[in-house]
Amino acid sequence: MILHALSHNKRRWVLLLLSLGSLLILGFYTATSPERLNNSLILDGSDWAGYAFCHRFISHSFTINGRPMALCARCTGMYLGVALTAVLLGLAGRIRHADLPTKPIMVALAAFVAIMGLDGLNSMAYSLPALPQAYTPQNWLRLVTGMGTGLAMGAFMLPALGQTLWKAERFRPAVRSWQELLEMVVVAGTAVLLIVSNQPALLYVLSIVSTLGLLFILTAINAIIYLVIVQRDGQATTWSAALGPLLLGLSLAIIQISAISYFRFSLTGTMSGLPGLE
Image (cartoon, rainbow, N blue to C red; front, side, top):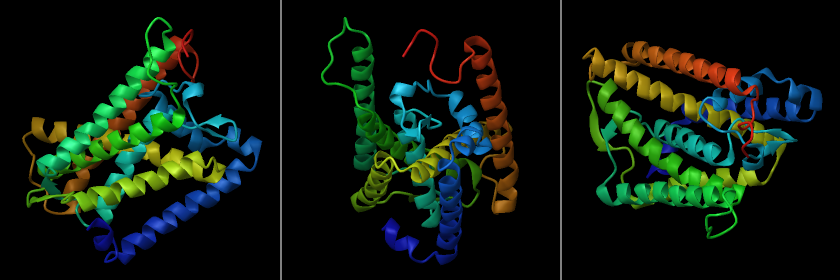
């Protein structure tokens, strides 16, 4: 069980709680002042990162005292789900586990992705009056379906990174049972409730964490591609040996985000949505 494994990693828990506590205090300090909120360098950086891969329509986003979160509701769910999966499996000591979940669990995760796809199609149909739609889109639905996809992305990406990065792979699934998947869903559901509670300090923290999830995905993909191209996959035995590919992947991710965001802003002149679309 993931939650049972977490109880044996007190040092990691302390580090996590200190990090989240610091962000929460910073979030309360920032969100309680309109001037600090509108001129937050941390939120500006998160916006810039989200801008590269998210449409950032204001009507599709949750807001922190009027300031849109870095990602729209669906992307917030996706990348927050990735971040939660990485944190849960990391705290449980499964960051090097290199096997995919069992086939039934993979089918369930694929169903999460399919549900988001259907909700996305319905949302698109709602924007085009000529097309029929099943229901009125809601940001909480975008968030929930995005979160399910984020859990799937994390559950697939971590083993892929484990297989490519580490020499002494542990060919055991990072997610081993239905109970563990349920535990992940419960944690993700808690995060959803925290977002829809509309508490500014909590939204500040979760906006940043979702952006870190996006950065993690890009870093992992870049590191995997690099290691395969140079034929150095499966060689790292220590974190110091793994640091080089991961730092390269992170550097490339920052460059990619900066280039895409700069190009998009040069074309549109706005950090929110696309001109003429909503």
